[in-house]
Image (tube, rainbow, N blue to C red):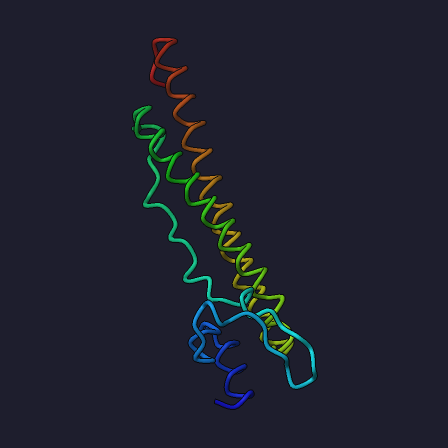
Length: 145
């Protein structure tokens, strides 16, 4: 496989190992046409972005257990997003060398979208907790409104 095909496949999102026919153990380092050494182990595919949790509970109707379980799901999701973004940052150190400005912009827009989605999920969870707590306070005062 020629170098241009190899790097085009990598930029397209395929794993370096698949694009170059390398096994993970052999994907250590390669020298580019310009003589720059590239650590290909940093460019391994990070997989698909983490799936966001299912619909979060409504604080007006949720039980404390519903919120506890949802909070755990959101926490796991947030940690998975952080790990995925860190992987993509490591991958970018290698692939950005071979990307056009337009490709880099799309790459960054995709990462921003994942981060924005995570923030939205976390905010939705926090709002559900606030609503739940407000409902409990109303119930303790003896009213519903």
